[in-house]
Amino acid sequence: MRTSLKKLVAIASDKNNFTSISDYLDFCGRFLEFAARGLQAVIISQNESQYCFYQYKNDGHFNVTRPINSHLMYDAAGSRVIKSGFLKTLRQARDIPVDDAKSRQLIRNSIYTLQQSIGAALDALPAGKSNNARKINGDLFERLIRLLVVELGVDCESGVIRAPVVVDGEELFRMSYQHDLIIRFQGGVKAIGSVKTSSKDRLDKIFMDKFLYNRLAETDIPHIAVFLNDVQRKKTRQENNFGVSATFLPGHFKGYTVKLNPLDGVYYCDIRPNMRTDSILKSHIHTIDHLFCTDLWSFQQ
Image (cartoon, rainbow, N blue to C red):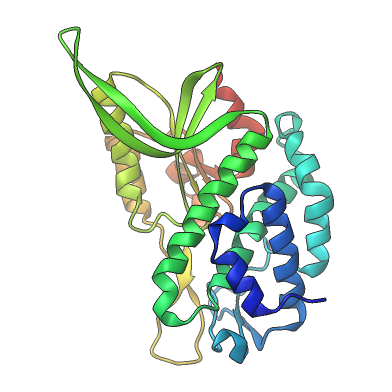
């Protein structure tokens, strides 16, 4: 029996319903099954046609969702691919070569679909609850990435690191830093990460966190950032003109990278075209499969 939109929204609104990867997989399957037949319409973006928007019926207040990249988002049939192949492929990530495009695409598209199923369901909430929905969605993306790292046998958690401030060889005090990802190998902190659904309004802080933490603690711990995407619905005066606009600030990213300090890894599920063509951006930004297949393992050295 198909799960109702009301039930899907209720599940997505409670973070306690997502404590394991299987919870994410189960919800994703339910949402995609609903989306196959329960939508009012699928609206195609007029400026970047790979993006679409789901419009709900009256059970979802006729709301229109966030942009969905149809090149990454699985449909109901594809959800079976996620359930049968995603975790099996992920567990072998360390051994997946760069040229295994099929396996890497499965990892990338599965993570995107798992998270966007939650985000799209929360978009059915009435307008007055959108801020709370945004917080829930962000928290669940952080949790998903941590669960996936742990699935690979790597010690990973969120929490506070107290950075020692040493002057003339004497520790004077400690400063507390909250991090989304604390990655450890053999008990030692080997990397620190930020996980956000978008870099919008967050990019400056991520670069500054690395600069301040490593400067104050006199260390060189790698700092990484994981983003879901960097697109939003384009604001337009025409009521039925749906398009997307980018929320990524390339000038800020390049300025901080060149003049402050580069991050040690930046990963996207839905990577923007300029991140593949700009010489500085493409050398520092990669699709999320690079984290699980390659870069994660370099931190243990």
